Amino acid sequence: ILAMEDALKYQDNIKGLVISNMMASIPEYEKYAEEVLGPQLPPDIYKEIKEMEANGDFGNPKYTELVTTYYYPEHVLRMPIEEWPESINRTFNHLNSNIYIYMQGYSEFGVTGNASLKGWDVSDKLKNLKVPTLTIGAKYDTMDPKYMEWMSNEVQNGRFLLTNGSHLSQYDDQKTFFKGLIKFIKDVDTGAF
Image (tube, rainbow, N blue to C red; front, side, top):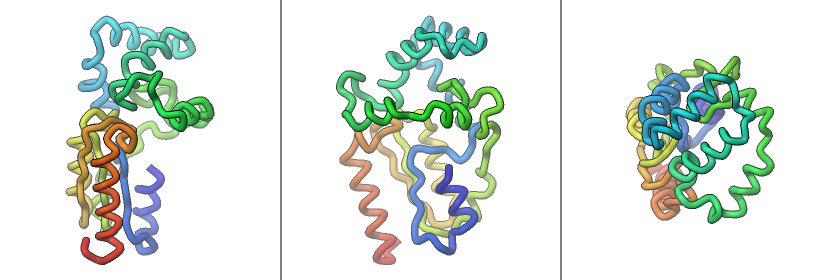
């Protein structure tokens, strides 16, 4: 989000832009979460999650348990949680929930309450980006890979990289992620992009 905002304002000072696993529209992200990601969960689990969300029961340990057990290993990092790398566990353990809630709210399926990202959308401004841009999406991501590909075509000088991973595809599809990222950096650096 910050990279897109900075590039839109200061692209003359940027050599290249990488947008990894983030959509340019919170409303489109929410639509994808509601129409695609949620329904991929077992129906009874998704129903229970949505009921807790409707009741604002985000502090319920059951909510965290369901999201952690059923959603995270499919869309955040595609491996059993007990096998997650120490660096990811450390990140989650030290996550500043006050900032996360301020920006996103409590739900993993959209922005809740008066969170600061509610309604954020720079989709119509992407066409103004001239800087070489790599947009990285993932097959199992929390972000819509088709929308990520669309973003790469909206910018004036874009490239799309699709991994077979999740939101943290730099971990669960390292080979594709880093091969594509390094190629982009080298191409931009040598002027081949």
